[in-house]
Length: 317
Image 1 (tube, rainbow, N blue to C red):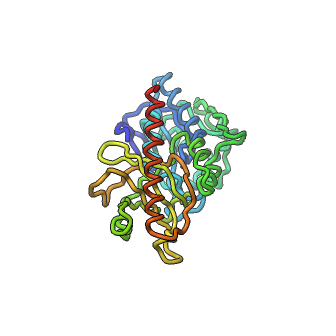
Image 2: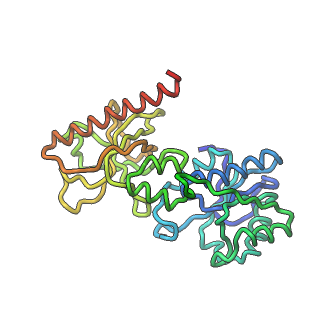
Image 3: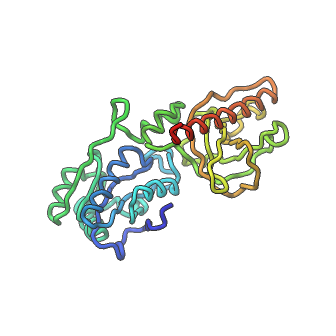
């Protein structure tokens, strides 16, 4: 992540920043719509010599207000930082949700950010019980000389891009649609844990286990072409998400296992980024372990070919 981006987890004035251009929103997927709002703030900051900033918030782990998490906090921060943001204020929702719209503008936008320009989507709400909207934001900010820009909602497939649509696409196995709306491959960075050792002991295809925490959105069960960041480089890989009907008993938990051909090494406790690039097929029960092993190795070979093709295209071959 861009080390120059500072993250504040409480509502307090920014230090040593000067006036700012601020993007407002939850930005849970940092999708195309979110990127348009953040990008507009960054561009305005560059034009006017302001500090590009984001005001967002954090929900409790068990919150269902916005649905399952699309990205981890670390992924969210990395994607925001990559856009050139220098300051992020991300307090718990409970710390500011009782503010009136007037207090939100005065205490946060003026008192904390010294905002000169503010950017949001046209569905932005703020203040206690979401009582403020873009019209009241414009009116309240005008009293402090703050310019408010409402950024047009991004569209995909003729409809507005939203985190709800992305969640639905991931849950239905429409990875191409999800990645297009995200503007980058869907990715996880969960810690590597211990599995049952079936891949190593019985299949000859040792896997990296990164199982989903309860608060995270789980994509559609199936086999995916993926790539994983290990030892300072990307490795083509094949990932299976789901219960393993060939080797597990009925009712076993969902797992996320990745086979990385050609890689060996101890990765337990690491949090490598795993990008999902293509949905290959559903999970099914095989008649033998050999048939399951064949699927894993075939998927891995397809992944290697897929990324070779991407590299060749990038190189203009």
